[in-house]
Length: 428
Ligand code: ATP
Ligand code: MG
Image (tube, rainbow, N blue to C red; front, side, top):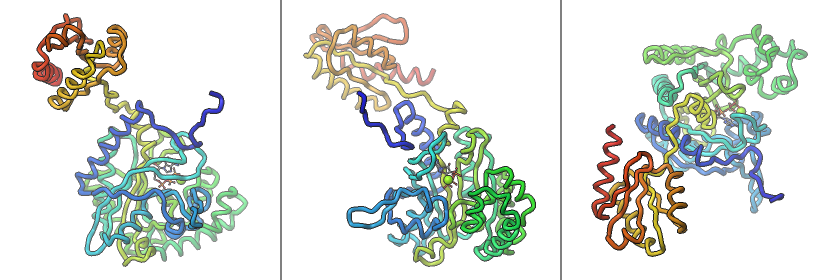
């Protein structure tokens, strides 16, 4: 036992006690997506490295130090996807989904980033993401954000706050970048090593530094909003207006920037204080330049991704988790002769009562030990096939959750009887 193989650091297993919570969360989210007219797209987890370096940006944290990149046996540089948007755009272009169409798409699955694992931060993590193409907004921005609000609401999370900002056009950002660099260069000694490095590579990212001294310094910095172009200002104002009319509360966070280079104009995050430093559960924005950057025609686009680990943690904390499902019926089969009739009865019950979970005892054993398992399965009834029942074509029923005498009925009456018993439970 000393040298058992363990999972890779930052890659975790989801055990049955967790997967039912995940299914619940995924069910709520994909249900909402369907109600807004979004369709699923399934994408590979592995892409050419160039796809990410060209889109996310060479000097972003993700591409600089977080990607799982390797050469395959042909010598091609490949990377496990660190996010879903680039692959989604690649697929849309490759399959011509953007010709005279405005697809609304969603995807779900694993993403990979070599970060320091901690609560809410893994190396393999999971996102549900959505992307809309061909619509310039701000109407679609507002609808998409309202959809994320509904997702969180329907998961019972009322404490997550929406933060909103506009990044303007690339030109506006370039002008702002210059002003910010000029200001911060005058205070270089007050910046930490990370921010100093970013000053040369990706200065806008300094705006969301977690260092409080840096944040104090930024109080005196030029503000992005003063550098925005008139169209972006109008777009942002209309978006705010639409959200207000739709009753979606938001805060403008002028320092909200995103860690990926392709964003412009609308950006947003849903944040909470309940997850420590890993407080962002959903992040997204507009990326009108990306399709063209990947060789397509200029195409407006907006999207977001939700972090499932963080959402599941919040849902568990909020107590909005349905109980882990248990068996409804447990089939106790005494003696080898009971195997075939038992298998037939179990199949017959699954045909007749598709809503019920029927667990058939396998592996033999004494009546007593089988009953113990029946009890532990959580089933409401044990059904018994032993010598007497086999001879008479009957089955015995024992209520495991109430003190009722065991009774015996003809086997073909069983589906109707159980159907009625469980319907009564549902009703009552
Ligand atoms: P953070 O600032 O927390 O690192 P990010 O800006 O890098 O997040 P995005 O690339 O915008 O994250 O991904 C969208 C969402 O995916 C995040 O808001 C978060 O909920 C989730 N997420 C990102 N990285 C991880 C990770 N390593 N482990 C778990 N969830 C993650
Ligand atoms: Mg990150």
